[in-house]
Amino acid sequence: MLNAKNLTMCFGGLVAVDNVELSIDKHQIVSMIGPNGAGKTTVFNCLSGFYKPTSGEILFENNPIHNLPGFKIARKGLVRTFQHVRLFKEMTAIENLLVAQHYNLNTNLFSGLFKTPSFRKSEAIALDNAAFWLEQVQLIQMANRPAGNLAYGQQRRLEIARCMVTHPKLLMLDEPAAGLNPKETNELDELILMLRNENGITVLLIEHDMKLVMGISDKIIVINQGKHLATGTPDEIKANREVINAYLGEE
Ligand SMILES: Nc1ncnc2c1ncn2[C@@H]1O[C@H](COP(=O)(O)OP(=O)(O)OP(=O)(O)O)[C@@H](O)[C@H]1O
Image 1 (cartoon, helix red, strand yellow):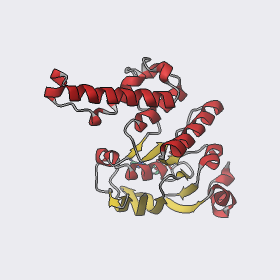
Image 2 (image 1 turned 135 degrees about the vertical axis):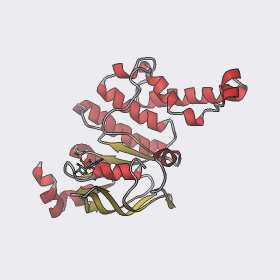
Image 3 (image 1 turned 90 degrees about the vertical axis):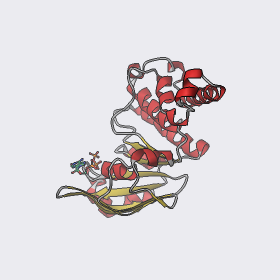
């Protein structure tokens, strides 16, 4: 589904990502791990169009995307969250999910002004979709609360719902468990598995929580000092001497 070849990203003289190769198959849950500063977020930023890679190729469903801006990549079905929560804090939970669907709304000036039947229909579909995903992430009771008033774990789930209302094919989560307590991390674990098992989503995540990573990943990609170090199943990665030396051994 997603393939990166010779992916390289330089910031001035610093090679943050150095010839990284990766591939993600449909319906897999793939985790990218590595020490702080290894280059994981930079890889994410290149894959999602936030950065234009210095060199290399990124194919999404066999089409090159490395020259596309982020919003066009998102429209192709590759959608992401960020390391820090980025919700519209003054808007309610449901409003955040409606704003995310603006692209699907039939909103030209005429239809919006006169509330044409097609405008009202697309508004109703967006509302149903938003309510469905609030239910899925167990936030339906919070629909009318300002997003900024939700607990941190709830805000994280709302961000995932905000991605899901756009019907992505590949969901990329940057440190989704950061700042969550163990109960919230378990709920996140279940939510990610549900997205894959019941909604057919492919998931790529960056995560430092090894219990979560080892528990849900089909495949783990290890990055160290900007370079690809290893790829394998959780058991293969746990037993990989180079990985233990570079990363797991530190813990
Ligand atoms: N916009 C930027 N400009 C300059 N240097 C950058 C930029 N973004 C990242 N870097 C550098 O690139 C390297 C890789 O950073 P990156 O954030 O990708 O690592 P990471 O593996 O995601 O780390 P962490 O786990 O701490 O989030 C670091 O040395 C970082 O300082």
